[in-house]
Image 1 (cartoon, rainbow, N blue to C red):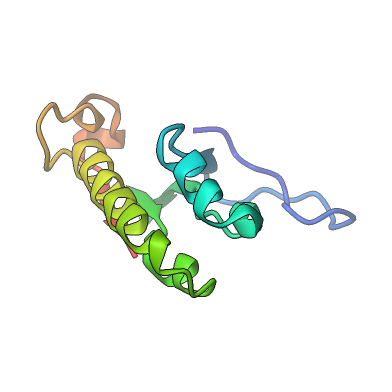
Image 2 (cartoon, helix red, strand yellow):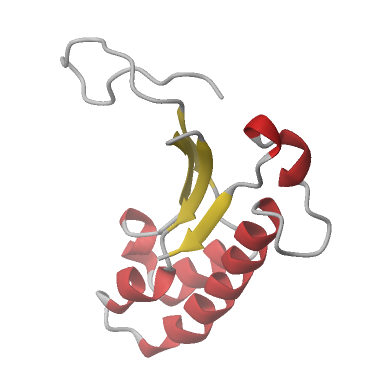
Length: 118
């Protein structure tokens, strides 16, 4: 994983532990959510992060329910549940707990990454 520079404009450049932010908006679910709530684009929980901590890799994603609930549109609930289920499957697969443990080959020092959808 590459080392990321400071993330705020104007901040002094410094290294942090290896940290990658991945764009994870689902091309099927995001348009459905935007059709239900056009202004939702600012709140779409589309990022997942991968970073190293204490010699282990960590994969995390934000569960969409709390963010989408801010809008108060009941039409978003089934989309949020489906998005959470998909995110959990991906994180489990990357962390080596799901079918086809792709993360097992790339984890540092032979360890499987840890993962969660919060």
